[in-house]
Image 1 (cartoon, rainbow, N blue to C red):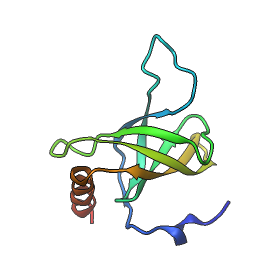
Image 2: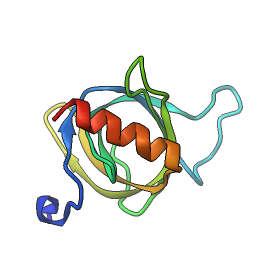
Image 3: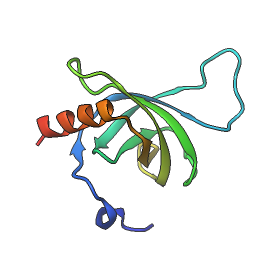
Image 4: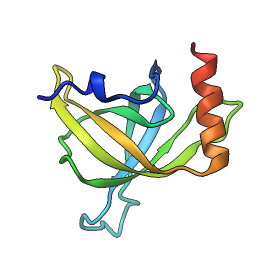
Length: 116
């Protein structure tokens, strides 16, 4: 696996936050929203690492929602899967934010700053 530590443009903070994600283009189940609950491992202004039960493919586009804190609104955006690797607990995947509005960027900056 490539070493992605050297490619990071933004400082990451370790943070276990509630999140949901949905892989775009997959078959839709009419009886649920298609979102899968998970937690984050770390977050930066440029992306997030998720803890997953199942593998997701590099290059997939996902819609994600992340609860940052009680004081900040959740982040809802689209991401591209940069990598996914097997762990003892399941999988971890690095997601790069594709579309983040100015308000959401500010929320991410505030969140990262609080954990520095």
